[in-house]
Length: 108
Image (tube, rainbow, N blue to C red; front, side):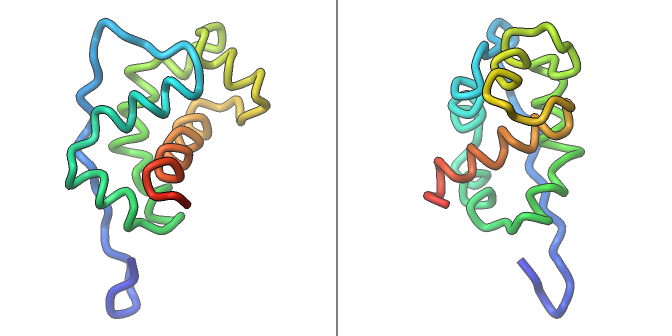
């Protein structure tokens, strides 16, 4: 949110994903993202604008890309995202998951 003409820095702690679970579908990835957020992180996710959500690329987005192997184009999750005609680049997929999680959580 803008403050004195500047955007505040938005940071969410890298996620605490289960090591024994990788979602196989886009919908399950969105649900798992919401499951690991703390109450404070949920409030923050609802309060960010689009540029701030994109700024989460290095924290929350990196956790999603790494934990769920979004760079592996043959993973079930990436294949499901392709089936849904979502972006095919790992960075863009992580952002799509964050956008969908925010929409589900905040009704946006």
